[in-house]
Length: 213
Image (tube, rainbow, N blue to C red; front, side, top):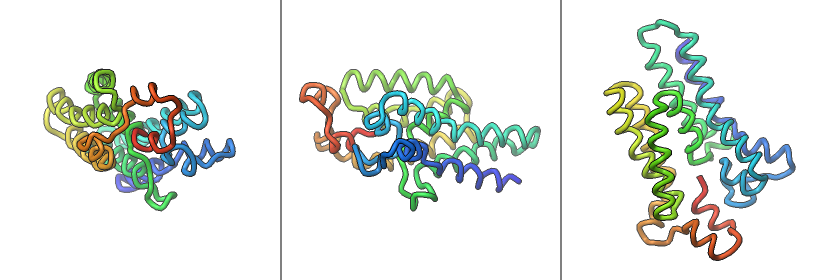
């Protein structure tokens, strides 16, 4: 049953809720805005309400499989290991969805759901870090990368070594991998700042792609 839970987590994580919502409203979000299937592009194309729904759905598709695994495994001594594996599988599903030929999003919203489940205090601290970084430097991608970098350390500090810390480390590494282009632009001072967007008028599709989460 444990392996079935992991596979189910991946399949649920692969569901592209942003794309589904866009299709229901007659828009293929892969062909507009940044082309990303995440909540940011949905918000840009379909409005704040649809963006918020996508954010919650992308977070929930990791939390629900983890809750189901914890419930079904009960007092199994390896339960926490399989719960973490199920959450990790859901995260991989969002990044590399089976239904979209393994071309998915950057994983920030799904990571939020997992971190909310495994260590809400660490998540709250990372959200504050994200807000502070974006407010000071104006780069959403830098905020995401910084928060992702801090999360494993916070989980390790609050819970010690274990399945939660290893899961947080895996997620952080994959978020950095998916943000490789953003990191390159940050190093080369080519990443677009949200302040620059605000000063230059409407956001373009290209800018959205660079900062899309």
